[in-house]
Image 1 (cartoon, one colour):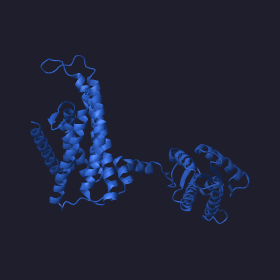
Image 2: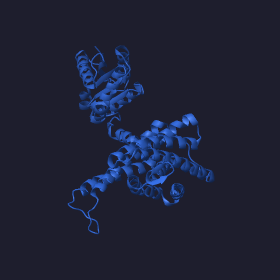
Image 3: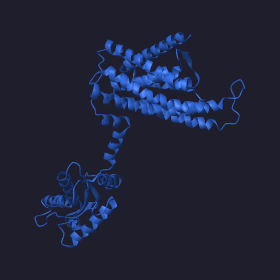
Image 4: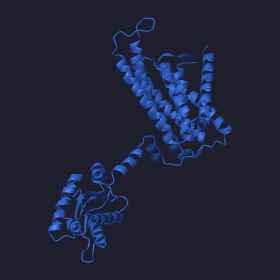
Length: 415
């Protein structure tokens, strides 16, 4: 009987793999959504079997849901990434996560019903429904972490194993599945008192199924060499950004954090990222310099030459600032005719020299007429000398800016 169960498990894995690999292979003709939907639709059966359906094989008791369906799904996620990219595979990952969050929420709401029954009138198993909801939620959370981990590990192993796809495929899958088995068994034992033999049996079964799935994947890649697998074109950090939608956040920040007139970052973005920039620099012992830069007599320019000419002056100042600072420095429009520049790694003396250079370059901007030059006053503060937070540095630099104005403008005050 135990050997017979092993044969049936191998049959289940083969049918599962052949069906999914066919959908994946024909994804450009039938649509990638078919593959993703089918893979996601198996999640309920997978969790149900992992909670209730186990078979005996030599030296172990295992669940086809965990050994076959989950192992196959994770490796299919990795194969989908290899065949496509992180932006495609994340649709599956987040779709599963969102769907099962809703399943868990609805399971809790269903529990509010009074005396639910089956179609035959017998009491409904509300306890099992609640447990299944917990298992589905926990299993999906693990899958989210597993999917990101197996892809990042696969890419990281590229530095050790080169472009040998199958060894990397196996090593990444086996490693992540081992950690997944530990995480899933902990909750399963808490809910169902599953014995420790379930853990060891499931671990061995997942490793065996990984070998089987990797073998079938290798055969598929050999038979369909024309359907080439693209090599990695991004670093691990870029892949992680794609998987977690970080690049979408960065794009949104870039669009919404820009000053519409000058094109530099706006005050809202300063308030979001400025404290972190200062805090990180101080913690690393690098120090940081902050300049508050104000256009001198800017109101006179607006009053005499009009706001359009004033706007042009602000754009010219922003252009000079952007070109005068290093790539690691940040330029923000603070408001009106004021700008803030944050320079990591500059102490008081080099920061003062940088501020003087900025002042001199802005002084070469062509004014509205020959009689009026464009000048700026700059207040300078450095951390940790004048403070260790953005607010402290801005306050110190602002006080020095007013000193520069009072002393005749067109100057840098840094102490």
